[in-house]
Amino acid sequence: MSLALLLALLSIDGTVINKTTGQPVAGATVSLVKASAQGMQPAGSATTGTDGKFSLEGSAEGIALLQTTFENVNYNKLLEPGASTTGIEIPVFSTSKKVQAATVAQHMILIEPVPGELRVRETLIYDNPTQTTLADPANGSIRFFLPPMSKGQAKIDASSGSRGMPLKRAAKPTGEANIYTVDFPLKPGETRFDISWTSPFAPPGDLNTRILHQGQTRVIAPRGVTLKSDALTFLTNEPRTMASVFTAKNGPVSISIEGAGTLANTAPPSEEEDQGPPIDTIFPKLYDRIYWVVGLVSAIFGLAFYLLYRQAPATPRKATK
Image (spheres, helix red, strand yellow):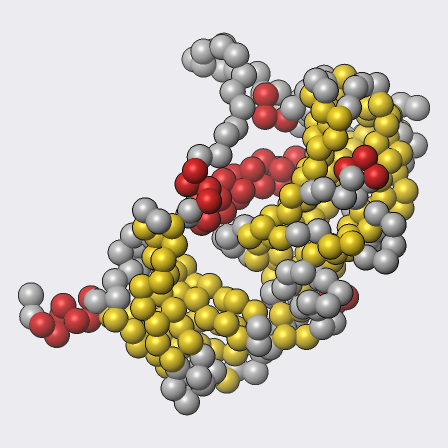
């Protein structure tokens, strides 16, 4: 192998482009980040010239991505295994505080009462139709309601795009009771927020919450769980898991919960499967080290959630009072 070819294989070059203006970005720092036994580690960096171009030494073998920051927002470009490492384009966008330009494209609430505990997972997918990243660090990008029984304690994962890596964010209280916000940029396209919390619970019991945005909200209950509310309209049972799917009205929602069950364990086993005890999902230590793996896990869970959301409605009927 010639020296020139070897150097080509060990170099990465491309251009940082501001997609809002269509202009190259000069003076941006582009960093190569690679997975290792210690987690994601920097493996080189370069600064773009006046033409927005950069070139850095390094190999894209294994798990690698390029990172750059523009107007205080981080942008990542995953390097596909085996793909060319020359002429890579890293898109960035100008930033605006007009977060109201984004709308809720999907909203799903999964309610799982288990012995001694109520588990609630709320997924909000925002759509930003502009060519501008929407971010308001002082006031947050989105607003959501946490019921008093959550005690304001929620785990939040936020990710940009269908292949975005979920990043942990904190719920920040606003001046309104039980309403919180999250500081996370809404890049063009979809941004997903997974908000989960637990509370001591013994069925039958009530969940009192609020839906703050306009649009359709789906509420999902696993097989074995009964939801009763004037604010819910039954749509269908998902064929594989037999989970119940409802639509919910905007505003205050009061739900009476009976029974117990989890979505993970509601699917009937196939004839070839060992009908042993249910298996709980436990994230390995890799979760804290290689966060792109978490993105894959989240995407798989999200796909199942999305299929429930998209399920064609049966003949609507009111939830039992």
